[in-house]
Amino acid sequence: MENQKVLANIHQLQYPDKGQNYVFNGCMKYLMECLGEKEEYDYYFFTFMSGDCVTQVFGQNKDRWYPCFSDSHFDYDLIKSVFDSIGYSFTFVTSNELKTDTEKYKQMVISYINKGIPVIGKGFNNFWDNKVQMTEEVSCIVGYESDGKTFFRLPEEATNLMPISLEDEYPYTLVFVGEKIEEPKLSDVYKKAFFNIPNLLTLPSLNEVSYGAQAFADWSKAIESDFYNIPKNEFDCWRVYTIYVCNLATNLFSKQFIDRTF
Image (tube, rainbow, N blue to C red; front, side, top):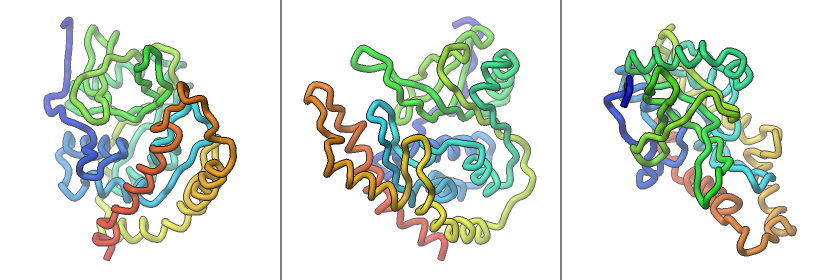
């Protein structure tokens, strides 16, 4: 391919057979590998720092995709809390900023790939059943070709490169890791995350998504109402129901958080 550059250490971002179902944490773990960071900054560490392993979600919009907290609440504050836990600065680029100065950020992505560092992003959709599915996934950009005319991202559970353009209509958000500022003590980091759990369990609903205790209440109301009265040929069970069972089951087995905290 013309002018193609792809990171050398490509692998899956998450491994469901190991209880790894939340891709943002896999992206962070992969980023740490590329930076040569300590092994303690693994997938499970980031599920604690992001709040994924304790926060149930439930979405009211049946056309959208709500796999976990970090996916549904992917904003500056969440990214800051995670990067603060490892002592790194970062650059958070909103979809409006990207659309306003696309060429600038395309060149920034290229420079990171050239340095062997992936760029985390959100807003990537998938294509199946002969149509684009509005999943707005979190992923890692790991390569490019033709001077950025095409970029490549990883899917969640495979290593096939997925071509994307940063010039299309999708609302991409980008996160670039910055310089290491400090290295917080792990004991302090775990303690802070542990005492933040009540805040995560009582978050207010946002953009038709509820969190924590409210997510369970809203999900139960949906089951008892006509929310799931969907024609069989239109019923995507995974998207509107099973994903929340997966969320619950994954969090029930996030015991490592308690083990590491104490």
